[in-house]
Length: 78
Image 1 (cartoon, helix red, strand yellow):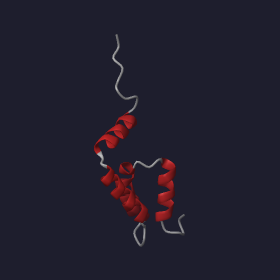
Image 2 (image 1 turned 90 degrees about the vertical axis):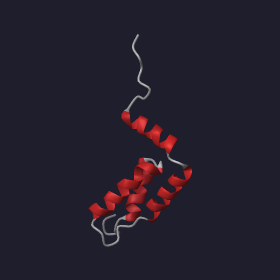
Image 3 (image 1 turned 180 degrees about the horizontal axis):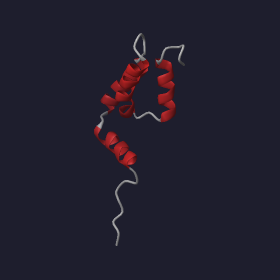
Image 4 (image 1 turned 30 degrees about the vertical axis):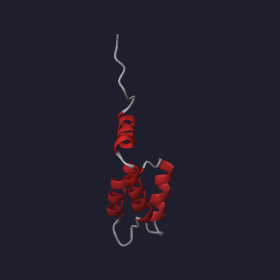
């Protein structure tokens, strides 16, 4: 008899852990940060670094994250 792993992939386990451990208050705070995040005069790399810090905790899917990223970068780059 072979034991089946509790999660199919590492990403699935990470998603489940975020859902379990991250409170709605924290997730709301992270979403507000992402919505307000702007590149401004910073390098794109600096903006990306901050964006990545928050994106995993937001619970947003890739489509929503791409939209927020495009909204936050300098208009000449979008």
